[in-house]
Length: 155
Image (cartoon, rainbow, N blue to C red):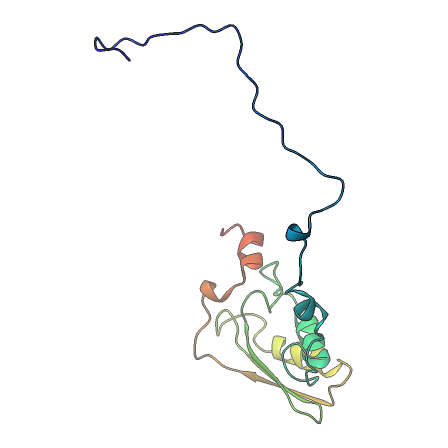
């Protein structure tokens, strides 16, 4: 800009192109990777998890079984709905599921715990299933997974 606040325009016939990058057929020694820091991490095998621990085969099978049980009034499975508070599996195959319902007056209050017990008891590796129905802490929509909220249009 000049002093009067006007923009000056300069016309040119051509602009000199910038120099091109030089590409060599063989990589230079200085740019080769000397050590892959991820090799050890990526080749590491997962630690053996007991079957009843989160990530173990029996525990994951129980969670999958719980995800097949749907609340009859809400088109979301009881696990994603946040009704399952805890799953414990002992080494001898005793599974204990602590759960709640959306409300104590839920129409399935009598049948849902029995269905959970049957489904969990049918999981391979589970010898005995027990369901503890609790009301404290009470269920609220904040316990739902993001998938459940998305399904119900709450996100």
